[in-house]
Length: 241
Image (cartoon, rainbow, N blue to C red; front, side):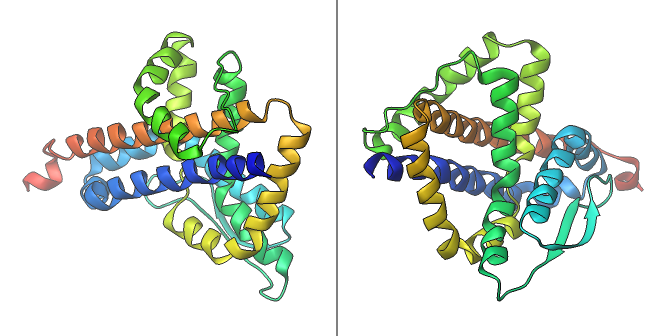
């Protein structure tokens, strides 16, 4: 059971960590970025791949958990993309679905990135070691791991992974929905982690990949928000008049 609890930590904590980093950046510079035409369009342009994948991940989970779809927008230059849905609040299955719908973009991106670029890399974690020690070591090694990853992949793979890592982070709404159904979902997630440690010999590699993706998304978020904010200092015609 100890390995299962450690697996659960590594499957959930990276997601919470990157959510905090991403949304801190959004809170600090998001208003300036989205009010500036060049910065806003740059944000949308680099989301041409990541944003539809993010929303499609939500959409698939919405369908799997039997929610009613009330609206879909996979991409937009002017407004936020979204998948809006409603569900039966008296159905435990549908309420629990909110958690999996919320984390779907991150987990989908982990799967895609693993298939595209991570298969040749070893991110195996020893599940018997204290997760806090492992996470601390991972934070220290993150720049080195990122450099190793950049050197071991083609430029287009690296670019695609960077785009996916920024646009896979759950929104505030996603996170609120996940928290709302956490009491129902976490025991199920723990059972899945327990079964995973029993069935998959390379469970350490799976959770290690999730951890690395969380760190990569966090680094990407800091750099990308900084660059987008830098674009807001470019004068535009509408600002000059």
